[in-house]
Image (cartoon, rainbow, N blue to C red; front, side, top):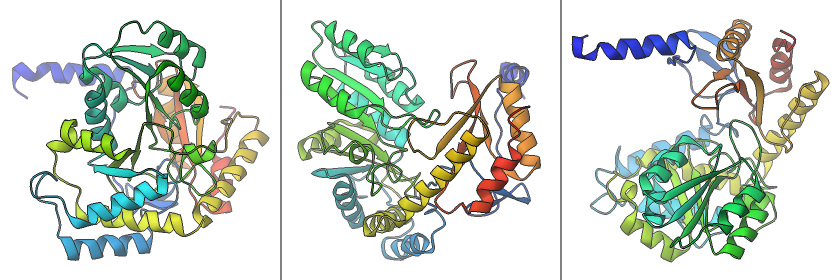
Length: 386
């Protein structure tokens, strides 16, 4: 490496010493309850493919059909020559799923948050952001140039105090996640909606991990809480429970028209690959057709909760497919992950900056297509006393 880039070696060495260096593992199979990882078959307990749709034959067939009909790529941004007809069909299905007037597709969840938040807030505005928000939300707030204040995680009293001292800010934007993927806890959306109305604030909710996993029919956190489309901006992804790739935002038609004109990550980005749109459309149809996958997921969530409690370990308050095993030290988290992998159980060690310093953990996720013997193998491998 040229001498003027030696600092990169130093940075990587520092990450190695702190047990924070990341590396890629090679998968040699589609997503599923069992996968081929680095040449061996292991149980998959760290994917966000909660409903098992990424490898569903119907979803794969829909992706193939969309490719044959629309080609391999959109070819341009949607405002130039890339607004394929399948996008409108998928947007209508997503709006219907979420109960909103309209939806708009974007390239990814990260891309959506980087573009939508700065479109809503600028200098002179105030953003209130939950302390444990995803990196994409944090970066979106930074790009906005608005004043950003952090309130403690799920702390509604702290949030209200910040709203009370909003002063002469032009707009007030509250940014949260509905389901926090590293802790498995839910933001109390009914209380959020009430506070926003009281203080005339805009609500922005990242629904990435809630779509397909929350609510009786998997429609998300608002359904879980028995509420309608009362959040101003609801962002979701296609790459987790829906098994594809991309993102969407649900809002009023006027709000979406505003994003089309102001959200830079929409304006200047190529449209989704048709295969991704076709796959996501089929996944939405499967979810709408019946609650079977959602019911299978919750059945496995309950089995795993019982197993955790039997072993004396805490579980999230709500029935969600995320089970954090908190360790604290990043080296210890890595060692546990490697020990479990040696037993054929693939669980990733989650370390800073993904989680706060001192809170490294193993993040276990359960799928709708995990069989009882998979869950028992997981519980048998997790030696929680070491």
